[in-house]
Every structure is written in structure tokens, then in C-alpha cells.
Image 1 (cartoon, rainbow, N blue to C red):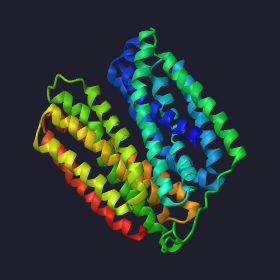
Image 2 (cartoon, rainbow, N blue to C red; image 1 turned 120 degrees about the vertical axis):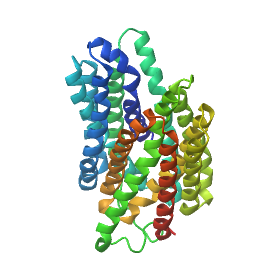
Image 3 (tube, helix red, strand yellow; image 1 turned 45 degrees about the vertical axis):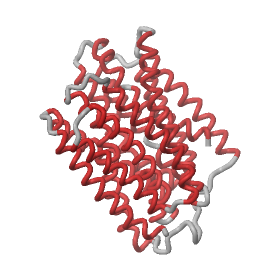
Image 4 (tube, one colour; image 1 turned 60 degrees about the vertical axis):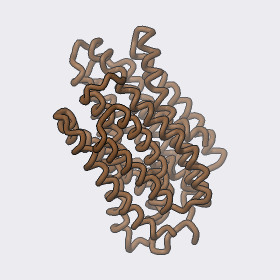
Amino acid sequence: MSALRWAAALGNADWHLAAPLLAALATAWHTDIATVTTGLAAYSLGQGLAMPLWGWLADRYGPGRSLRTGLLVAAAASVGSALCPGPGWWIALRATAGAGFATVIPSVSLYYGSLRPAQARQRAFATLTSVTAASGIASPVLADTVLRCGSWRPAFAVIALLTAVTVCRIRAATRAAPVRVDVGGAYEDPPDAVPSRTSVAYCTVLGLGAAEGAVMLGLPALLAPALATAGSQASTSAVLVIYALGVLTSTLVLRRHARVWGPMRLLATGGSMGVTGALLAALVPGTAVLMLCAALLGTAWSYLHTTLQTWLPWLLPAPARGRAVSLFSASAILSSSATVGLTSSLLQDGRHATVFAAGGILCAALTCWTLYVARRWR
């Protein structure tokens, strides 16, 4: 399990590593920040498009082989990023790295899906969420450290080295204890998770993924731009740190709640936190409220997302659960990217209340939808 957590942490660290380095990249290549920022969009695009493929490969050949192959692709792309000569290569290599690390979500989810009962799965996902949140905090520290040393290139070399070591650890672990991905049973599987309803289940997974991405990934991504466009003197990175701390602290509480609470209560708790945070940001403008909103959204992510991770793939038969996870995550990533792109101009125009009010309404709708679906899990 520690090797799997390392893989997830490295994928999340690589996601967050490039943003603090953009100014240094633009200076090194004598270009503007907008050009190198395209690499961030390329990373998300590569990850979102490749994830369904990795999900299919994990179902077909096993999560161990899929995870090792994807991490090797990511390690090679990170080496290329460290040696990259210009922005054109940078964009292509960032897309490749995103496509490689996209294997982490479906593969690790299948490993964790072998845990029984469901409460054990949720506690494992909560721990994984804590680890990835911590890596999101560590990434800016790594970026700042290498910049103080005079170059941005070692940051990606570190990611490449750690990823290669993780591949070796996963290879050794899977040889010692191969995973079983078919973990069916009366307690685990809903009675109507049969092939005749697979198409409906796929539509549910895609729809919930898109809705969660717009709210639970889109709104946190808009906190820093909202802080900047509001003319606040506070550091925009502070709101992201508070969000990560909200995820970390709430997952510690979630591990206890997951032992005794059912999925509907967990979903309702997470959804209500998200609605409260978004509506506060819409109705009471100010730096302090945005910081509080960040903490509440972090808590909402912990409760709502880990519950969906634990239960949603069980809407589909066991041989299709890797694809279910990958489609859910891919639709969330693509939806969040679209949300940020569509609403950034509204924030620039000072329409913060409109953006966060719409986010609160969508979060309420997402919560109601998840509660409706969760009736099949009881």
C-alpha cells in the first residue's frame, strides 16, 4: 500500500509542480508566461484523454501492469521535461507526463477495491487523499528549493527518479502478493449491478464525474484567481495551502466517521460543506471568507469524493470497474478545465457573486443526485 500511496503522491506532485516554475521557464526560454502556461492545459488534456485507456488496460491486463507501464511513461516524460530545450517540447512533454500519470487513478482504485468491507476501502481512500494533499503542499516547496539553487530543471529530475524507484517497488510488491480485482459479494455489490444496466450506469458515472469536477475541482481552482482579482493583499498561494490543510484535517476525522456512518450521511455532510462554502463566498465578499471557503471546500472534497470513490464503481460489474473509475475521473478533469476556462473572464469582470452562487447551486444539485444514487448502496 505504501508504494501505491507513493505513486498517487507523485502524480499529484507532478500536477502541482509546474505552476510555481512558470516565471522561471518563461525567462529561460525568452517567451511569455502565457506560452508556457499552455503546458498546464496540455497536462490536463493528456491526463483526461488517456485515463479511459488506462482503465481499460487495468481491467484487461491487471492494475499492476497498467500502473507500471504508465509510470514508466511518466518517468521518461519527466526526464524529457528536465532536459527540455524550448516551449514547444515543453508542451508536448507535459501532455505525455499527464497521460502517463493518468494510470494512477484507475489502477490504484482497483487495488483499493480489493479491500473488504466497504468501510475499510473508504478509510484507505481517506488516507490516500491525505497523502496526495500533503504532496500538493510539498510541490511548491520543491519548486522554491530548486529555484534557489539556480535552475528549475532538477525539480523534474527528482520526480523522474522517484517515479522510477516507485515502479521497482510496485513490481516487487505485485510479484509478492498479486491483487484480485473481482471482489464481488452480497454486501459489496448492489443487486442490480448487471450487464443489462451497464449503459445506464456508465451515463451515471460520466454525469456525476462531470458535475463533481465542475464543483469540487473547479471551485477550488477559482479561489486564487478570485483572491487576486478582488485586489486582496494576501498571497494567492495561501488560499491553496488552506484548501490542502482542509483536506488533510478533514480526512483524519473522516477515517473515524467512515467506521459508523453510512454513505448517504457522508455524502450529505460533504455536500452541505461545499454548498455552505460556495454561498458564503458569493454573499460575503472578502479575503477571510475566501479562506473559510477554501477550508470548507477541502472538507467537502474529503467526504464527498472518497465516498464516491468507495461506492460508485460498484454500479458496474467487476470486469468494468477500472473503466468506471477512469471515466469518472476523466470527465471530472475535463469538466473542471472547462469550468475554469468559462468562468475566469467573469472573475476578471468582478462577478464573484455570480460564479460562486452558481457553484453553490450546482453543488446542491450534485449532492441531491449522489444521495439519489446512494439509495442503491444501502
